[in-house]
Image (cartoon, rainbow, N blue to C red; front, side, top):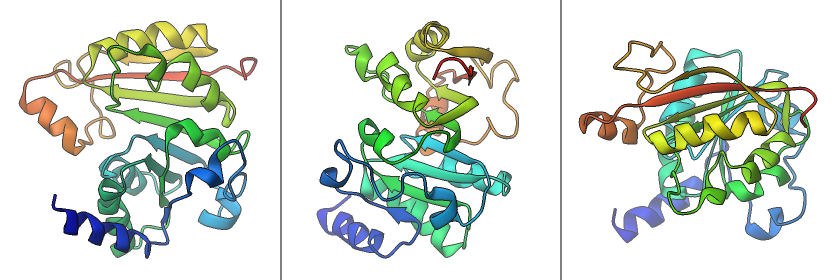
Length: 225
């Protein structure tokens, strides 16, 4: 992508009502204006809120929103040029239950209030092979999620990384989650349903290389928040 193309996308991002871009100063160790107000001020309904963390170009967020119009979806990523694609599609197709948030996931607890989120999807996150603390399913990040994920809320992990899959299976029960489902080759085993068969840009690349895609689903227990 050329520098001019990236700048054009950044400018267009400023025009999308479905894309929120807080500055670091607005979310660092302080509550952001959206906290506790996503349903009332942004979606203007009481439907459950589902986050996709590290959403990239937003393909999964958009597809989930179309399959589940009774829920609200927010795709989160730090890369504005990637988010542009999802935000543009949501804008041009008038999708009322989709929003995007450009921020670092380290700041996520400043943006969502207690019990504000019903589900979290972590899709094809960097497995951080050399630094487990940076994994989006590490105890450090799980503690952040527990501050806004509802009791009984669901965490989904879909990844090409067997390392991240196995690590998460081990870590979740130690941090208040119960594993509900898991599979280490959703396409090869025929496990993938209509939702799990949604493919992101990166997922299609992994599949073309013959890499198996894994999935797990876990529930946050009420006494572990």
